[in-house]
Amino acid sequence: MSSQPDPTPSPTSLKPNRRGLWAALAAVLLLIGAVAVWSVVNGRLPFGAPTFHGTVIQSPDLAADFTLTASTGERLSLSDLRGKVVLLYFGYTFCPDACPTTLSELKKVPAALGDRADEVQVVMVSVDPQRDTPEVLREYLSYFDPSFLGLTGTEEEVLAAATPLGIYFSAHEGSAASGYLVDHTTTVLVIDKAGYLRLLYGFETPGEDIAADMRYLVRQ
View 1: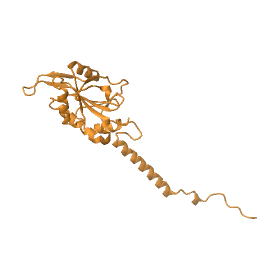
View 2: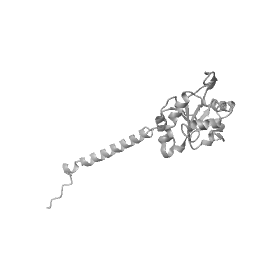
View 3: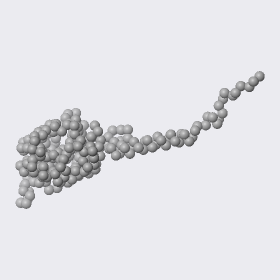
View 4: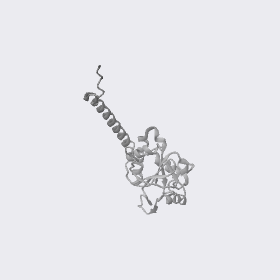
């Protein structure tokens, strides 16, 4: 009677290919590491919601629209900038400290975004419309970045633009050299491409941090 082969696999045939398992584990770890690095660079948590350097605003309503005169000489509405992320700041050209400091940080953003810089628009609305004509704004902002836009109008128009966004400003006496000065909110507001207020940046937020957030928002 002929013998039949034993169908029970030998212990050797059941032993896993350890070299293959280690190679697969290494590939998975490399993938996780690459995703983590990409997430940090682009301002996102791995496999999660984005993390931002500013205060997140979750408003169900579009940011209040307004129309002012731009540093180009044309009338411009906030809604005309839909499709771009808007970094909106209320300041003035005679400002001795907060405004030049903030604009110096904001000018780092276009340089950091490279070929996507045109998807972000920095806008400064003047809280000193008496002195800040479109021409004055254009010259002043060009010292920081020629792409920056200035907006001005009557005091009533600027107040109507500022109030719904929670921006405060008030003129007061200065020195004989400076003339009057204007106290104002130093927050930078971020309006996303769809027109919603998304973020607020406090005074002296580094431009590098703002640029990191913009890398995420321009892809939305």
